[in-house]
Amino acid sequence: MVGFWDSPYDTREPFDSRPMSTVTESAVTALQLITSLDPALLAIVGRSLGVSATACAIACLLGVVLGAWLGVARFAGRDAVLTLLNTMLAVPSVVVGLVIYLLLSRSGPLGHLGWLFNFEAMVLAQAILVLPVATALTRQVIEDAERQHGEQLRSLGAGTGLRGLLLAWDERYALLTMLMASFGRAISEVGAVMIVGGNIDGFTRVMTTAIALETSKGDLPLALALGIILLGVVLSLNTLIALVRRWRERVEGSGRGLSVGVEAVA
Amino acid sequence: MSAVLTPRDTTLHDVRNALQRTARPVFELQSTGLAFGALQALREVSLCIRPGESVALLGANGSGKSTLLRLLHGLLRPTAGSCQADPGLRQAMLFQRPFMLRTSAQNNVALALWLRGTPWREARVRALLALERVGLRHQAAQPARTLSGGQQQRLALARAWALAPEVLLLDEPTASLDPHAKREVEQLIAEFSAGADGRPVTVVFASHNLGQVKRLASRVIYLEMGRVLADLPVQEFFDATRLQAVSPSAALFVKGELV
Image (cartoon, rainbow over all chains, first blue to last red; front, side, top):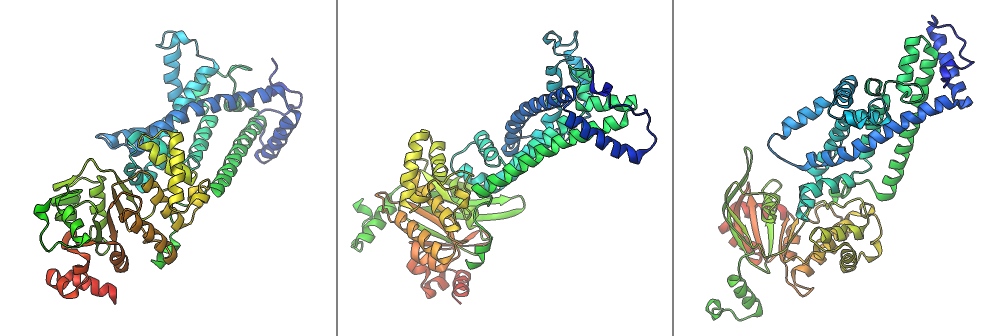
């Protein structure tokens, strides 16, 4: 299969020494790539979205449940768990990739699954990478909600787990921000998918690994063009989610309880 | 029963009081204390609340009214002494700022019923009846958070009423409402308290509005710095000389509020 980096409009010298023109040139290249609807490019964009969206869906489902529970539950050692969770936010993606690689390699404990250098391996790696983000952000949102409204739900008879889930459901639009952050972390990382996916052309190559490859080959404009497309994809998704959020909050009322203004009357 | 009826108990009101004296207490506190770390919110509180009473907790901000209500409701545990609530009685509590989930008014009431074990379909039907009771039938499908402050507090009352509570605890239920909404909510509370729905409800409410206390309460408990300084029937509480004799600082508070 011929990649788009071998395409006929790529006639520039490698190691272009004019940084300013590199930016304009790559913008033009990006535009050309998009308008030409290069099937190889579309496949890569689609694969990137597929891997990251699947990983994100899995991680966010788990993260919401875990984060909601951590937001309302009080137990010995909770602070230690939260510190660990916050540390997990800083784990480099290559380390996650490495661990998943060891797990999935032929001699590893999950080697029999045959996932390594496949879609599944990339999804697993990104899901593990994103889970702490989803959990930590959900925990923050739910803990604030619990502080304000937990008593009311306890008064109505909701136990810890149920209270967490009810609050998560109630804060569903606030949690969209968590979704965006998780997706952003997943689609922008390169280390984990590179290690467990292998950047195989037409098979496990995604946008970030393609960018890394083009950069190392010296085709900076093409690499940058891919970067611009990546940003464009994330930008349109974020815009969409922000619009949905604003629309729903307008319909359903964003106010928390009574307005403060009338208090002066009392 | 006749043993506690004295010859002076002649009116229906007296008979009701006599019955209250014999009934099992709804709440019984014995030198109860409650501390949040170094902050002592309640000190040596001893009191007994009997079925059918309508008790006002009066006091300045930070006097321990809300803490006492939360303690009665079981949201807080005492750090000293004991606090007994009749476990056979259903309780409901109204907060100063009712929390409504981001869904319809009807679903908010239904959810409270569902949390107590009513199947969802039945809960939705009973929620409509409760909304009817507080005059919010037409707002049933409206998102709860788009309702006005007064409507939200009435919705909170509907949610409490749907649970058919024998005990209703209210934490400054009208503090953030305008006068009109305040009257509507007070009216509903008075009706529930008087047993307008065929079951008398024991009401305990926190307030720093003397007019409201006069209108709704049969007994007033005055709190200051977490201590009960006066615990009197409402007529005696508003008798200036009597209150002055019991607690000069409570008398000062009432005078200050009336000025």
